[in-house]
Length: 420
Image (cartoon, rainbow, N blue to C red):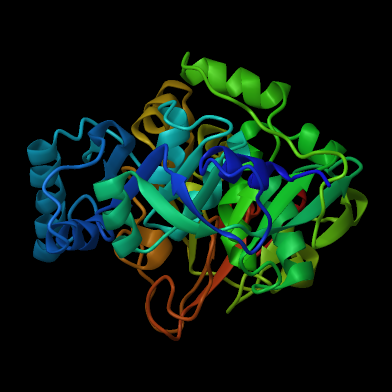
């Protein structure tokens, strides 16, 4: 019996001749990640277990992105702890405000992720890097502490679900719509502790930005990881950001899957996930009369330059509705600069939007766009749980950049085809 790409990567990192789903392995970690919310806890546990030095500082990445620029004194203390630890331990890859951005957009952009690698991060959306053909999963801060001390992490080998996307995408339909539609089919627990392996001609035709969006939200179906086998698109992207060696993997033709899900892209319209769960996906036409108070374009899910270009295409020559606040958040410093150089920043500001520095802030209701009681937002973020973006009686509707931008103009949820 053949093996899946996920099984092959874990086997290669655990020196296991035979490996099967359900088996526990101790895997060597190529890269381990913490942010300003989770890393301080990991650093505390690192010291509690008596560790004095990192197993390999070159494999540790620390990113200040969640409550930054520092929203209060506690956030400032958290970031200072990371900064001091990085200096003490020789962590060369500490990304501070103004030098990095949102972690899951930043690491691929910096060439820190490559096909066939095994990556953990103390953040659930670490699964983003599966878009590059890596095994990447979120862990707790205590697991991160142990990995920082030993260079390894214990993992249970997941079963895999193959999701095959057939046909061509409709106009404006992107990675966000593909993944929301799938989560609507499987549910938020439909892939619990399983690997979601995306394939099919629609995936082959999807650019890296859309692939990163899809793997980013694998966790919203409960998955251990999301992954796409490397191809020419992957090779072109990886070679544009790094020249280091890597070993790509792919699933065997006779690999065993717990389930195979077939999706016809002809069935997928622009999607909106209504609160309070990402599984509540609908065609935009089904919710297009829903008024909004705020639109957010950004996050680790949809804050890349391709997302901002799409939003700017919708907003150019138009104005944000008088009753709506539009917040645009470039995912990284490079994206921010590119948005300025391409004139996208001017489009956003002239339309009546606010252009933010890179931050996770509004996505989790931390700062830079918190909702008041009774307010409603459409956002390109990844979660719409109760209170996710602010007051527990506020609401978040998830969508792609085109819908978020169009909704900002319309003053209600709607698609770009509705705009004059």
